[in-house]
Image 1 (cartoon, helix red, strand yellow):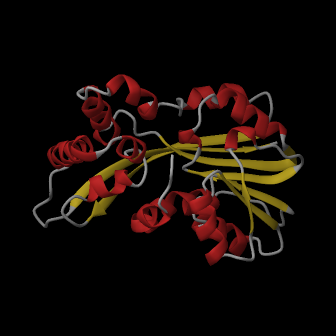
Image 2 (cartoon, helix red, strand yellow):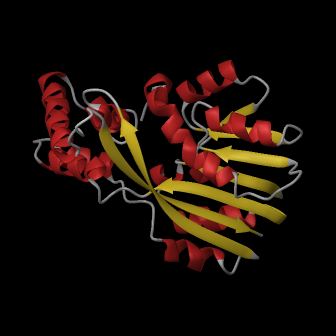
Image 3 (cartoon, one colour):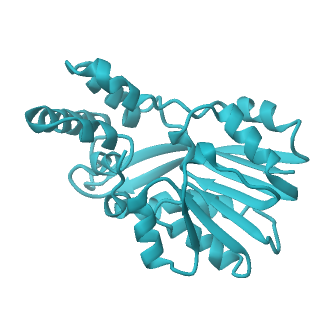
Length: 253
């Protein structure tokens, strides 16, 4: 899946807020090694650098386009191209991830491995969207299932990687000293004619759109436009309310 940093950052303020909220709950004073997994264009990694300027900060992402923008805007940070599922380290003081784990499967293996990579007293801090039952994702699945190419496209809409909180509790409890979890349902007030479509075009909808061509692509995008307009009607003042549920996991080894 190719990523467009500019499209992703259209709603940068809203996408960044969960990272700010998670960062505020981390009580590390002077971490030496900090990793941001799925760092994207680097805007959140820059917040980690501001918080701990003396730490060695490493942003990790598998998208060359995202990393190119990160390097251009934040040259003082170390950037590494790697898939989250193959990432390994040892004695990390902080492993941080904002809205990235939702793209990768097998969270049991992933989360356990990262917890074991922490130094004593190290922290795993993760935020994951869990919006699969909402129209933002459910309408994509319904629309894809209406297409002749649905069998080929189904792997592109295998969204449900993020598990319920109890799943992470059971995996992490034997591996960490303490942990906490919470969920927040962010209600974003969006502007424009089709803001939900624009939001999802930068994330969940993008793989499907890339796989389609010509009239089929145009028809699919138009179908999604109408579905989102019905699911997220405009308010009397012309804005659109877009709910996004997110799960937070914070664990100290």
